[in-house]
Image (cartoon, rainbow over all chains, first blue to last red):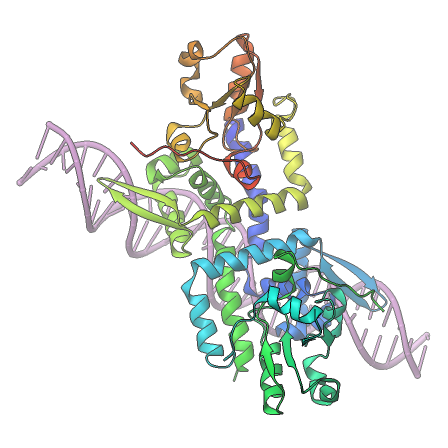
Length: 225
Length: 225
DNA sequence: TTAATATTCAATTAATCTATTGAATAATTG
DNA sequence: CAATTATTCAATAGATTAATTGAATATTAA
């Protein structure tokens, strides 16, 4: 017969492990990362993460069972969202731990992005000052739903898929700083490559919204339309 | 053939998932929690967490493979320790997320500790002020190796197992505040019960060293002897 | 050198997890 | 009302994980 203190500890760590199990799957982590950028339907999440609809749905059930995400029905669509901001912060702390402890993270980054970023890190504080002075253009190249959910105040929104057609909106006489979901998203890399190829002065901001928020920068939100 | 961007994302989330997998087992979480309090041998870790030596060793291999812990040989003994302070902070963020998202945590706490804490939460700021004024006695009832690894400056160390014999060291004319590993450790609860049974004025500080550190309180360390 | 102690390894078994497939359900549209 | 679309459910197969057991290894003490 188990000692009550032992039973208590076993029960408590079993609960903590619910969080660990939820985030032990690479696919669920990708879904969480996407949801950090804004609410999405199953269909959109499945496509973004290259999952079948059934598989995406199953992973989302697991995340919902551990109360990291919530869902609402909007007509035909089930819209998933993070249960609260703490989940996003937790995801970020897990990413930072992986970055600091697993050399493979940097190796993979170098192998896949080697030379592509080819761009100096942007100092965030300086960036915001330049933005306030109107000295740079900050460009958000994520899907609009993510821009609406949270963006750098004053940033322009031109999703990468629309950048080709949106070039006329961009100044040629000042630096353009493109950003997206964070260090492991290639949207801003592709945007900078395209912009440079067309003669624009473009650089990449590596940090995503969560990183900026954690550094104390204000984030603007648009009401859902 | 996989799109290189897809391959990059899969590879990156696979790395993040290494952290998630490491913390998906209740037993590994208990081991991490113990190591947050200070380095320990396999034997001690196995006993504290009710694991067989072989099983404890296997779990520690998993934690080592994900680089959350490190080990050094000291004669016969392998001493395991956290790889760095970030691991401890991550563990805490995971615990806080579980507390905020899983109602079962509070329910389990209430079921196992119901009425036992029977004690009002201690305001940490007030506590430290009273300690500086010599108005309370702060008592650390963890094993000495944990006290040595980090404790409240000025706290007395009397491990719970030695408290029976150590009562003479304690004042009867002022409050005694006992603390241990944190909200899910019962050492301080048992200590307060014993002290009150013997007429001492004792209360429990729920927070552990990590919580206090996160709140900005100084933590003292003793050199290993 | 041998015995004892601490730890890890390897193989096995049972449980859990992940992806797939086909079916079922819910909501909207024609 | 029927067809379509979005999502979830349930069963299955294969892969992975956790605990156990017995053996092997490393270090110390006698």
